[in-house]
Image 1 (cartoon, rainbow, N blue to C red):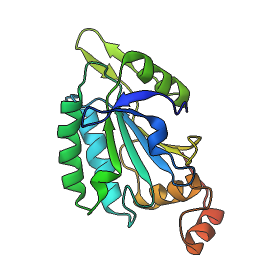
Image 2 (image 1 turned 30 degrees about the vertical axis):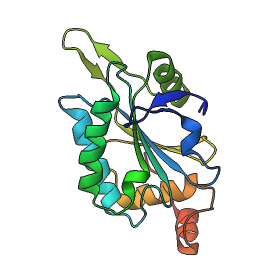
Image 3 (image 1 turned 90 degrees about the vertical axis):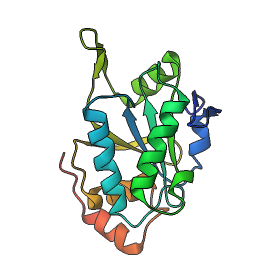
Length: 185
C-alpha cells in the first residue's frame, strides 16, 4: 500500500500510514464507515470479540488500523468509535495500538484501490454497499491475507498475523502451526 498517504487520526492530527508500519510488526486493516446504521458496527463488534480472544495486544505485537471510507466523517466521530471499541476490548495499552482514521476522498480512494476494496454509495439511502474483510499487512505494507466475513475465528486471526509478520512475531509453535496451516476461504 502507499505508506505516504495522509489521514487524520482520532485526535484530529494529520498522520501518514507510514507511522503504523515499523518494518516488522504486522498491521490489521479494517475499512468501515463509522456512522453505518447496521453492518459496520456488527463487523467492528465481531472484530473486537476476536481481538479479545487472542493473547496479543494492539500496539505490542501488531498495529490495528480502522479507516473510514466515508470522506464526510470527522476525527470526532473516529474518537467516539475508538473509545467505545477500545473500552470493549478491555486490554491495557490497546488504545495506543488501535488507530481510527478519517481522510479526504483522494487518500481514501488510493488506499481502497491499493488493497482492492470496492464500495459504493447507494444514493437512495445515503448508505454504502461494501464487503466485510480484515486485511492483513506485513510490517512494510504488503498485503499478505484477506479474511472475509463477520465471524473471524481467533486462531485464524493469530495465524494471519504470524504470517504477515514474516516470522518475526510469534512462537516456535506458531511457526509450526503456520507450516501446517491451510487457508480455506
